[in-house]
Length: 124
Image (cartoon, rainbow, N blue to C red):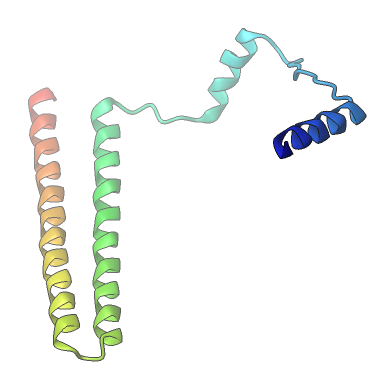
């Protein structure tokens, strides 16, 4: 019986407050105005190779930043562990794996640079 009481209380509350639903109306220009306004964004007119290269360099830069943050976190973990062997070994492993990952990121950055130079020579 409590469910019925809840339903009736909601129904009576809705009856007290009549709702009015109104859709939003767009009073702007048509499709052509929207197409014309896209010219105001000043987007770069670069080729696909340059865009992909910029994206890859940005991602690799953020990965290098993340590696530095993880090394700092491992150092904090070492300090908070108060010199126990378990926390020292865990922090040491975190730093080792992070440095290996950082080396992979740096080598991949070099590989991306070499591949783009090679492709530029072939295409150009």
